[in-house]
Image 1 (cartoon, rainbow, N blue to C red):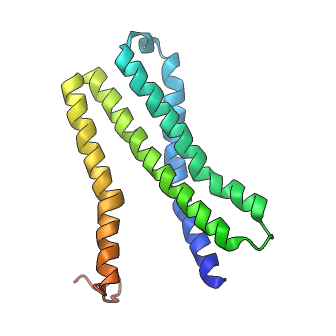
Image 2 (image 1 turned 90 degrees about the vertical axis):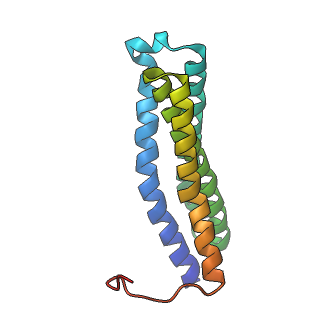
Image 3 (image 1 turned 90 degrees about the horizontal axis):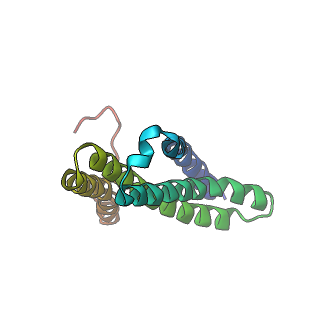
Length: 158
């Protein structure tokens, strides 16, 4: 039970960090259609905007869902299922956040520099996020499972 409590606490801390970012991104996206220049966007740009907005809103919903899940299941001896489901919701929410970030880069670069630059920038951002958010953690997990980590203090630079 202590382990589940620790996992839950760690998950909540992670969600606090990401929720602020997704809420700011969503808030900014919600204001864009009310800007005078929005009507000048091409059909492609408006489509990218709408997909990006939907991904941002769904990401926010998924990243906030563990709180609602906890409220409903609180004191019902469902800590294990709460942690498991919240973990999955967070992963899907992070995936949609990545899509929203790539979408906003695609939209901004398309407006400012044109389609070719937008595609290049979006692909670069997608690859960086894929590397940092998926490939790096999977590589570290693989290394840890092979016993590749030695316990070291934070002060030890090696």
